[in-house]
Length: 219
Ligand code: MN
Image (cartoon, rainbow, N blue to C red):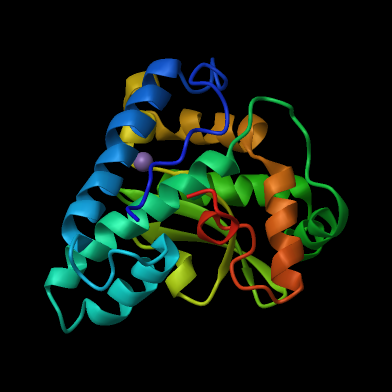
């Protein structure tokens, strides 16, 4: 069965005014769809064709150094996975702060919720060129990291809790070159903390990759 483009978990207009409906429609319907379509074309008729998306990402990551054909598979599969995770990392504006054990851990690891928000905003804003800014669980601890292009922490031994897309296509229609304003709006108002809490709970229980889409049937 081919990899499918997951529906957005909210309407295209749900993140207005911080992210426009035009941006979401293009980002989901053109960019994310292209990664899914490219991936299906690349794996059609191969052993990977029937594998779950996360397995394709891991396989291609292991093989791409020795098999040049695996670079395109990795790039498209990882982008498909990262985008599905990004949609779920956002939520229509609720201004709901992190709660429970994750909130306690954020304060312990970053000093305060505010210091965490500043660190994530800074990392996402300063990341050079295209990529992603993540909150991940590194064994018990929380870390902020960024990855370039399609790179994804699921092949680096981390459990992602939240991600912000910092490719220009995520914000250019709304903010032109002002990535800081896009990132600031996302960090302050759109992060889906109940999704992050669920991912953290599963990470703490030792389940690999938490509520990642490939494990919950969302893809
Ligand atoms: Mn994107």
